[in-house]
Length: 443
Image (cartoon, rainbow, N blue to C red):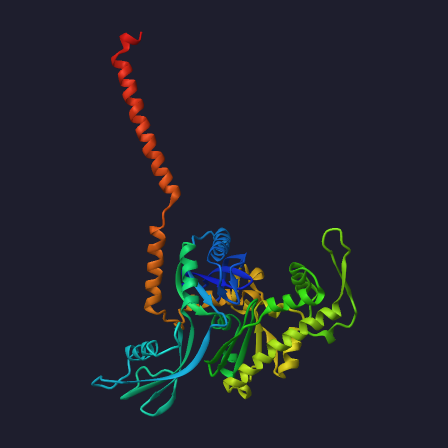
């Protein structure tokens, strides 16, 4: 197992990141390489431009290969977006064993039955996450294998997503020359990277603030209880700064990352920031206090959505471990104080460093790499959160065959050139033989 190497590919709205890792003899993660590229073909977690996304994937993977010295062929991919939905469902099967003992095959059969439930048109099941089991009316069972009973029931947290969105992710991966090992909901991957087992048992809410979306995952008693996606993230904050300060987008992003604060009251000095103007125009001066007010207004709105999801989950009073904020948005100054101010719940910033032991720890130990690191961890643990539907496996094979049938003009031209060279060689050989046989005449 220590030789197993896993690659996590985080296809985000602002960046596409590939992280290569393996587990050492102490159970910690050794980061072998990391590659990052700008994400120009993804909007709010959904692929909107295949070619640009494929190009970004290739750039990120190539950089990760260069750093790790490993040829990357298989990746564990994260999926998110506002199209992701979750629901609770109960399944029941009757046992027919003579000894009435529950086996792992029985549990797997119950899980597989969940993939057959009806979903909304155009959607498919991404995850079937077991919560609790009931054996002959005995409730609260977490591991039913080995127990005796006649009827096995299970409560499941089912995550669905748009079929087209999932297919486009597969299409991008295949066109980039890679294979998908697992398709994992990004909040689950982030949870694996930044949450402790104690927090999952006590009750905790993970808030992953990305570029296009904010992902939510609520855990209690080591069971995933609720997942949701808020269709707002760091990019909308950048857009607010662009409109409010009347600056270009790249300047707005720099203002947010270098001088931005999520809590305007924390800015005591009225610092003036000078932004270079367009060609032949004067520089623009912006107050840091005003900048913080713009950011705080939007971040409060995002956190209001988070509070609504916490209340909808029914676990508002069970978050003993509070809230853990991660993702690129967690790097915003004073974000911890703002979340505590809005929600009234104890909050900390989630970093993946707890699971890292060696390698490129300093480069990866940031909230923005939580999802990529979590994909590596889940791949190494083979956590079994995802049971990829067979049609997606078939889709991969179909896409791979389509790619193999795509005309390769370079090879075609080479073949034609070889044929031309062969013909020219035959003519040249015939001409030389003719000259040799008629040598006396030539002289």
